[in-house]
Length: 78
Image (cartoon, rainbow, N blue to C red; front, side, top):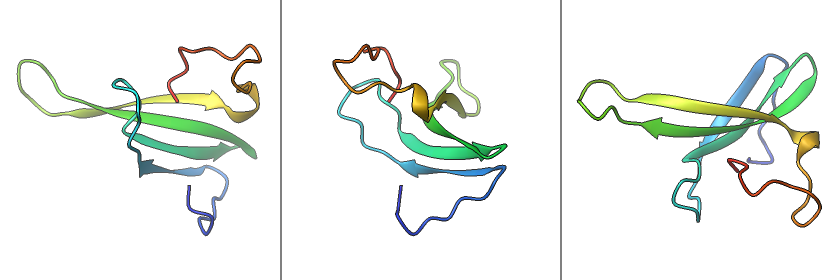
């Protein structure tokens, strides 16, 4: 996230991301709710039969993320 970005309570932002993983998010960012900051990840989804695409989101608590090798899950979306 850009350092100059100021985030207020009940707001957030997503930024374009180029994940090295094939199923990694295309957008990442954060949101603040009730003074607590959460990490956001987003994936653009395309319907198989046509129609409008949509944005699928995942939210996780920033403090829940363990550094690699310290019990963190390899299944985390970001």
